[in-house]
Length: 76
View 1 (cartoon, helix red, strand yellow):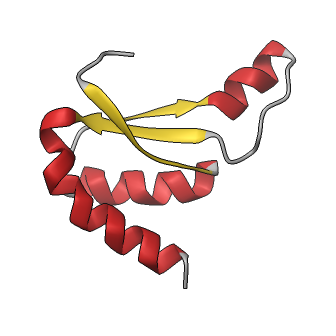
View 2 (cartoon, one colour):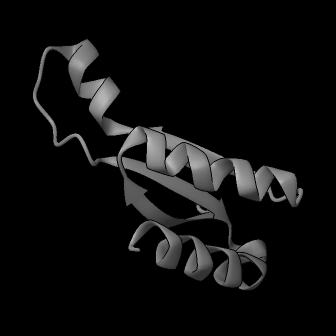
């Protein structure tokens, strides 16, 4: 993965996709790295909550408020 990206969140696929949608709605480019699916395809085991969401380093400050609000919402 390009070093211009930083991992901001790791969870299950469905929870990560919710945050991804919010970022895309704000025009923030992101990448999902799905270790669970990669392991499944390779015939190995991996934790279900191993889907990572990455954003560009330059977008990190803009992402922080969205990320914090999203975490608070899913923790309710």
